[in-house]
Image (cartoon, rainbow, N blue to C red; front, side, top):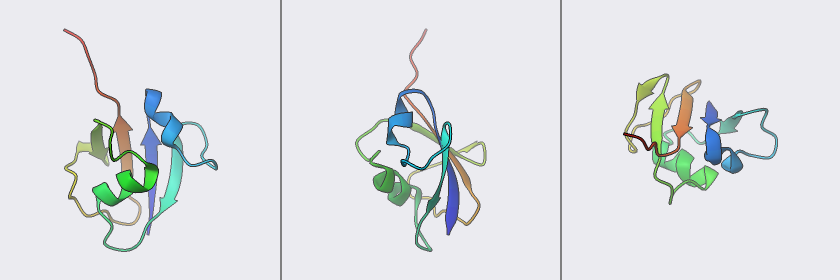
Length: 78
C-alpha cells in the first residue's frame, strides 16, 4: 500500500531521502496504522498534529492505499 506523506516545518527532516519538497510517497504493509507510519518515519517521539485527507486523525486509524497524510509540528500562539 502507498500513502502520500506531507511533513511541514521542522518535521521535514524526517522525510525519506527520495522525497520531493515537503512530500514523499511511502510504501507500507497492508493494515498499517497511522502509528506504524509515524514509527516508519521516526516520528514516534514527536508531538504532532496529523490529518488524513485534510481531516484530523487519531493514531490507531488504519491507513488505506492512496491516503494523503499530513504531519504538522506543535503550534504556539495566543
